Image (cartoon, rainbow, N blue to C red; front, side, top):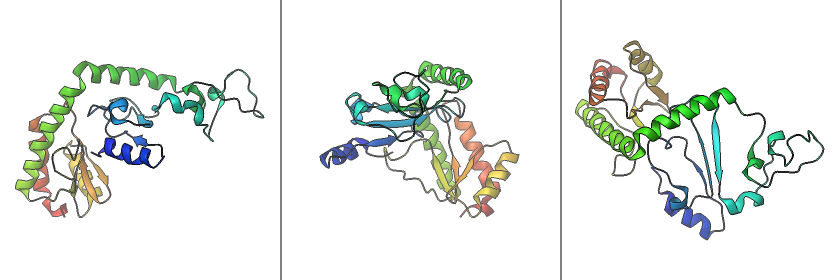
Length: 217
C-alpha cells in the first residue's frame, strides 16, 4: 500500500497533479480522496467492488475540472450531447467532460449490486477480515517455506499476496483443477482473498501448494 498522502505532498510541492490508480484497493481498504489529498482517482468495479468488467470511473478534484480537457472525448462529454458536431469541441463545464461514448448500461446494474454488497458489509469490516485472512495465509506460506514477494510490513500490503513460482502458469492450472482460483503475475502466483473467504480457505491453499511445491521458486 503506497504512502499516498506523502506522495501527494511531494507532487503538490513540485506543482504537479497527483493521479491515483486505485483499482486494486477500492473495495478492500477505505480510500478518502480528501484525506489523501488526491487530485484525480481512477478505478473500476471489476475486482474488489464485486461487479463486472467494462465499468470504470474517474474522480477529479472540483477546482481542476475546467482546467483539464481530455484529448480522447466523445458525444457524452459535450455541453450539448445532442449537437453531434464532430467539427467543434465544446466540453461540458462539469465532470461529464471526461466521459466518452454511451455508457455500458447493463454493467451499471452489476456495479450497483456490487457496491450495495460492499457498503452493506462495510469497508472497515472488510479490511479487518482481509487483514486476518492474509495473516493466516502468510503464516502458512512461511511454514511451507514458500517465498513471498509481497512486502509484509505493517500497512505495506492489502489483499494481494504474491508467491514466487518457477512456473506460475502451470501452478495456476494445477490449483484450478482443485477448484482454487488464483492468477499469474510477473513470475508470481497471486492469491487474492476477499471478505467472503475463510481461514479454512487459506489453509486449503497452503495444503495444495505443499502438494505442488515443485513449482515454487
